Amino acid sequence: MALKAAVIVFPGSNCDRDVAVTLQEVTGAKPVMVWHRDADLPDVDLVVLPGGFSYGDYLRSGAMAAHSPIVKEVKEAAKRGTAVLGICNGFQILTEAQLLPGALMRNASLHYICRDVRLKVERADTIFTSGYSIGETVTIPIAHKDGAYYADEETLDRIEGEGQVVFRYCAKDGAEDNGNPNGSRRGIAGVVDKSGRIMGLMPHPERASDANLGGIDGRRVFESLTRALS
Image 1: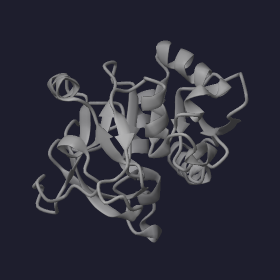
Image 2 (image 1 turned 120 degrees about the vertical axis):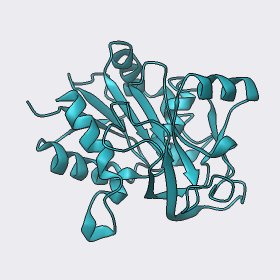
Image 3 (image 1 turned 60 degrees about the vertical axis):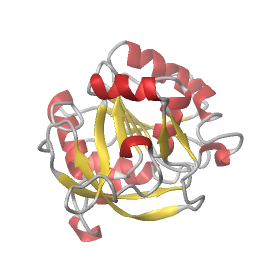
């Protein structure tokens, strides 16, 4: 049975079609595109909150989208065990909706950054990362101005101790001290919730899922989900 997925579309989303194309290529099934004002979420295995600038990033990135009618349904689906993936702006929305710990702040440079970055895989035993090897380094692009992951020391210690950090920025050789592009605390690029079924990731795996477009390191996120949820 093919994985059934839904992609949430907000005013200002700009990566929803990219994610939909990747999902269809990997899973063999076309995902359902769900508008932010809809109050009903289809019965699916996976919900993706894509990148972009929901509501123009007014007030605070992801803050308005977190109160959309459909996000209330996403939260209910997550409680029932539906897998949820938030990419870039989707990650911001998940933190604002309190489905993931921490917050995404303005980049340390105060500039928008769009380039490839190196990531170190911290966990390879989640439904999102089983296609990777622990300690492996991969290349996936970022495109954000508010991508610096922040949490207080107590929260950071807790999520580190509970294994919720799944991706960390690093240099080409895997060193963490000089590969952080945006000032994220402890170089954190992606986290999961305690259940392991909700993940937020600032880099864009859908933009690294086609060899013709420069790389396929991100494709394994979607392949991992397909194996785990089909």
